[in-house]
Length: 249
Length: 249
Image 1 (cartoon, rainbow over the protein chains, first blue to last red):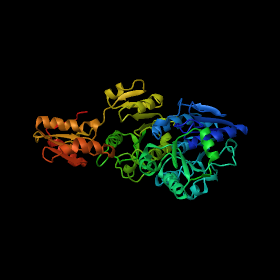
Image 2 (cartoon, chains in turn red, brown):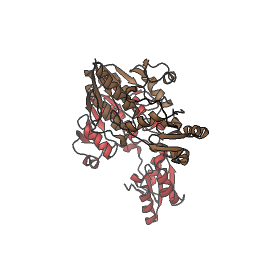
Image 3 (cartoon, rainbow over the protein chains, first blue to last red):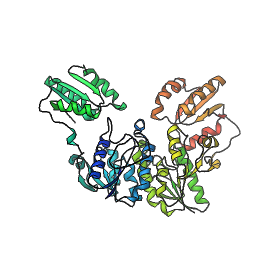
């Protein structure tokens, strides 16, 4: 099958640090190629994939994250070649779906984020414009009526995560630092249990206040440790030795 | 000629208060209709036009201004009918241009804003994706190489502006309150001349700090007067009696 995967323009595939969508897209493009499909990945020039790579931007435009015009350039570029494919699998924000009625190929859109009042309005309007892939049953339950084909959980390459029987005595949370992910709750849990906690993840500018008021005052470098964003290898090392992963969403 | 005009989803056509683009689009749609063209205007449901009105949103989605997904819904709706027209005249942000290669009809895009580093990158990439209409020679001189067809200044319905020989002794500035429009410079001019100044216009949330520090302290209700946003009739009345229009951009 000839498959086009459209990744956003902000971060390379796979990501070197933060980039949940890009991690999943990378695994998917590689594994579909492994299984004999003819996969093209529209991503950024610094990406590393087993699929055929197409790109407009040499590098991930991380500093432009969320700017419509970069999103438009990326998806437009994908649309130029989209008709050559049996299916277009879109992981971009909204533009892939919004203009899918101008494509000849069917589109599958993975819903990578939670539904808000605004995005619900959008997806309801475009409920039949694409096939939708939810990433959890909960997500699906938040908005009925979309043309869902399935719930496909985010892929994890389990082979890459080494198992270790013996654990160190700390808890870990790997996630963006923000209210939604409950960083402050993880700290509360650690304090109540009297356990060490390692917090791994980036802080978006919009969450700087939250970090400064709810997280940073608790970081003492002894019981509560904040590493910031770390690379893949270090992340796996920290996870391997952790006694428990805490994700209080 | 069958012409489709695409207006943004944020403000009705014509606007009741703020809305420079919507004012121009409204005049254009009406006058092209007057001249015998078959004009369809994609705008919002509360718009008032001589053209055939099409819309997705009942009212201007002003509170959502700038959100990609609303822009995408609006332009996508226009794209559904675009192939029926001899020409598509696009006044939307970036999406009309970005996906124009998927349309059968040629597109004319009016450049309604100044070029920034980001928008220049965008328009250079899409330099041949549409015919471009600059709104000033200066604007055109800021970015060479686009597929410009002409410079067409923003339309003004001069009949609507009554002339009065006798003037009152005040200066006026009608514009958004922001550094770009030089509201603070207009105040400086008025103070140096010892003249009364009436400031008319809205303040965007992003310019609230500017207003609070550079403008508000000077507003005394006597020499420097700030009216906020006013309707069309009141605006014309204020303009008619003003001794001088100050626009220190």
